[in-house]
Length: 278
Image 1: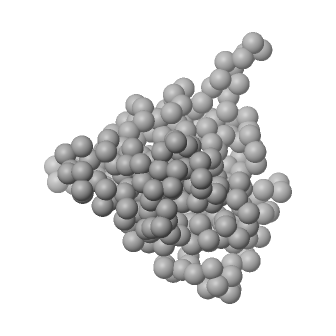
Image 2: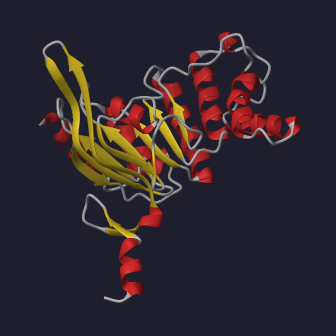
């Protein structure tokens, strides 16, 4: 085998579906991941033998029953929860803790209530872009607040904002640091259905422009289908792993109307529900 051929082989990796991809396309690589919590009765294994590769600019949603370790997996990718075994890498670099290459949007926005919307977004921007001028950092923060529909609320304190508006700030804050990977932990789970739909539309509109690799945990099957390129289904815990993966072949950019009217929509929906019910 020639040196050139060997080098080409090194540039490729096999995905969990057996498809050959160039390693340069793999943004996030979870290999043989395991999470164990010690208890008085012995070790409790939340995740085991979990393998998943996510491509650049891909939007992946994760579904599964409560307690299957979805949020645990996401927090490990974020570097907020130590890995018991296996590895997580972003563009080949092992995750060893939190970092600006991964932005996180939580179910609760976790804002500083005494700070304004602009100040909350600037917290991350100032850390990630320390060499930018004050004007440039403010322009970045204001741009993303405008994108989420908060151009009239720059100077409102977080405590004065509704829950939906606070989550808009959270979305703006995550995109503003320009991460390589965006992690979303049921970000709309606490919102009413109308606000939830509005924020889904805002999220996908910004994502269509930014094309940041995104991984989102959700309990909502319709949300999972609407947003994703692939829906990853996790088996029930303990010792949860990837049970199935569904490719969503809707064109982008997509609208809610076009998704609901697509001939494959209800087949996708049935596939996910059947998995969850077994």
